[in-house]
Length: 251
Image (cartoon, helix red, strand yellow):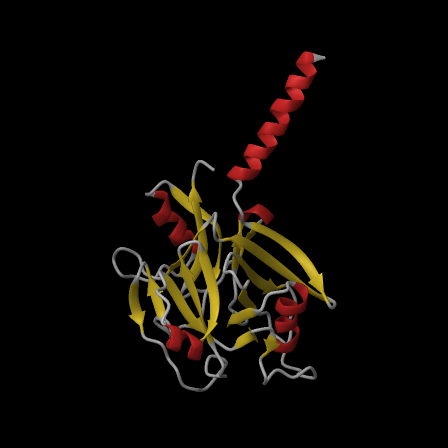
């Protein structure tokens, strides 16, 4: 009996330790209003969340594999990653971009063509122990000190309200990906749709399905996800900014 109790205790401790080592990235498939999504949820108080664009030689990584190869030299790897904002042909960012505290591109404040310029747009700002989706005008007013930042657009949800230009009757449907954040910046959820969705449907999933007050659109049909825990490593053409969680290779 004592041996059995000790065995149960050891198993319980092992499960707890394994869960702790697994960190706070949880990826899963869900449904909302007849649409299918894959989401990866991050606890920023426990995980190293960061952006990747250029390697040590100044060349765009372009692929998840290239980021993983660079991290391997540091004894690290990606636990999860996705594309993180719009970019030009040379893969340079369209809007504001900061990596490891270095600003590569200034904030673009005004309206413009395409989804990026459909104001309000926003900035995804990563700081120690938190990450926030911040509407661009508010971002300019507050000037938060972001360790990593990427600007994209349009905003999907702004302080609990859907973007004013999203129409329930829209027929524009695409694969879409984006990110939402909680008010305290601790809970961050990255989402990619598994079927084509409208902006209105996608935004409602962040607000009504996930209960997040702010969310930002990253991109459409080029959207890709790296989530090894659920067997996702989407192929495709080279990307611009990439956002991911970094973990030790021993985990």
